Image (cartoon, rainbow, N blue to C red; front, side):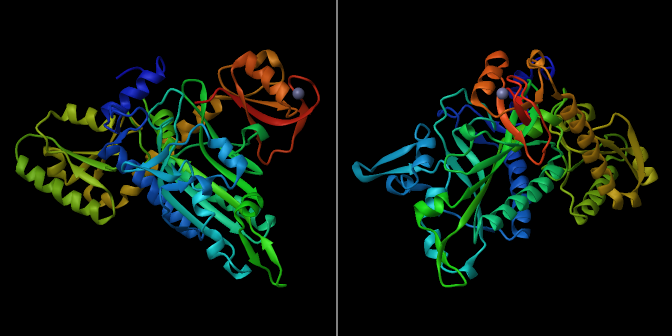
Length: 463
Ligand SMILES: [Zn+2]
């Protein structure tokens, strides 16, 4: 395995190949094939998102992939923002279509033509839906598995509210979902209010979740957007209020993608391979029977342990392949499995197991009864991953108060007046772009470029 510190990019590509997460050899660039192991990780994330969305009253829907040009062009800023990235379907068989159809780059235009049919009265609000689908964007930049692809695995929540105030509450609710998810994923991030020139096309404002990654760049792993009445006015999404007056709804969205997997690979992985928080691991516990005398009994005992673990809801497998234990240990470490149980002659005799955590070098012995406490071990792995990820975040974030430090290979926090001119100057000096003002931080200080009063802001090179 390539050394992660020396060449992150190589290491990243190699781990995706070796762990069989996705295959980029499909003959359309940027459209990768999901392999079983990678897909299982993605589906675990999707399951968590489904659970948290439902908990917060957001229900799943599924919209068609095609959007007519007419539908898409209703909101000018929105379509302009995507015009260079849209795939168009222009023929049905050999017949040219009357109207071009776009493969959804995102689903505002699809959903908001239906919302007016469903939302009629204040009693229909708040209205909250999400879907997990593929969206398509014609990327011209260099593509990279899970980070920049042309077919994106996308979670998008869309909500409508009686007024701006209620929509703002939804924005807070999204943060609660993001917090739960990031705890499961053991990822720390910064919340940045994107500058106006970088907000989602058609939004009032956008907040992005940015996390420092190896390779001295940050990765945007998610975004939430406040639309106000902007889309509602264009798509005619209105309701009858309590006084019998027609009002426009206020809207918000929340978007996440397989970039979450990129963050997990990049932040948690090491020179042995993947390191997976247990809620995402396709195999949470691997049992490796050690060959020797009484191998049949060892296997039988392994099966007993497996059914005990399965009964506790743990995803568990026995590795009975014809390889040496050493090979198997390396293989499962590479795949990021949180816990390994070794079972040999001695364990059989003592009715015990030897437990190895993916995050620790030492092994622990546990009695058979103690297997009931397997989640303590799984939580220990998560807490180790969390600690390491927090340290990585701190090590890769720095506050600076003079412009000469801007080139530091980290996500930089500095006061900034908010002007494009000052952010351009920073970009020219360091290739760092303005990620925006830090959300919920009211401290002010002199702009690092011009000296005028500024807000605390983040700057970084980005993936
Ligand atoms: Zn300035």
